[in-house]
Length: 281
Image 1 (cartoon, rainbow, N blue to C red):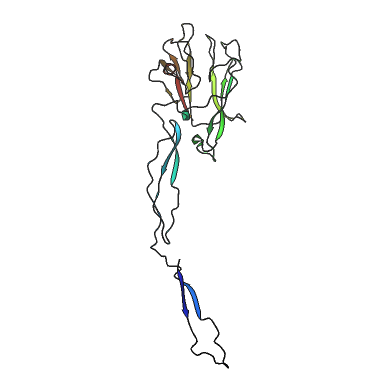
Image 2: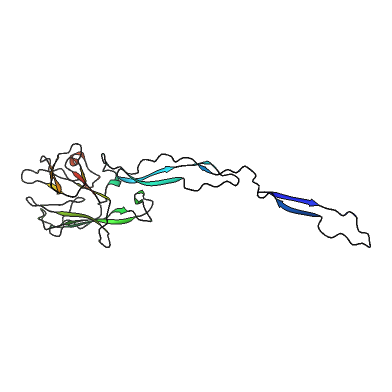
């Protein structure tokens, strides 16, 4: 901060009645030591970065690490420049996947339109928020990303086993008459423009694979997937063919066992007849 210094003077000879009094100040002051610190200068120093936290989601999420100020700045020392916390995207690729974690699932609770035979369209509204420049980590719910829809389209006419085409049950149920087959396209799209939205990874999980009761069989043929996932007690048999794979349960099972009402609300019996397919760009 510095200080002040001053000096004094006084008349050596006082003026008499006929003389002229002395002119000017009897004291003068000026600042001093403004460029001299009161303590030894010290630059600010950070501690080392701590370890990264666990990933916030089973599939995709963010992780965080922190640091503190080890030595604060003193005197003319430099202040610390930089953040005390860093975040980074992360994923737990590989291993067993916990589908009950909401970061692993699309929200299929907002269905507009069900499968109606030759019409063949299901649109699930606002299934997930994707990252934007303003919101790079929408999964943390601290900001809003860009909503997208899931569009499921029949690529050809097929015979439904429902007499009423408007009947719908479950979160993604497709009803097909015995002895028939159907082909579907799954696509994430912009809810306004309907343009496709590219995703680095997408996993589709199919329920209810069964050999049936001797008169019907529910199997799945898929192509273009990078990997597939089955439960530990899976009854699904896998047949590899050129440019794809066929998945079907190895026995009839209990046809009265209802399909789950949500992809994260399932049980061991249902999981034994499911397959999850991983797609990547």
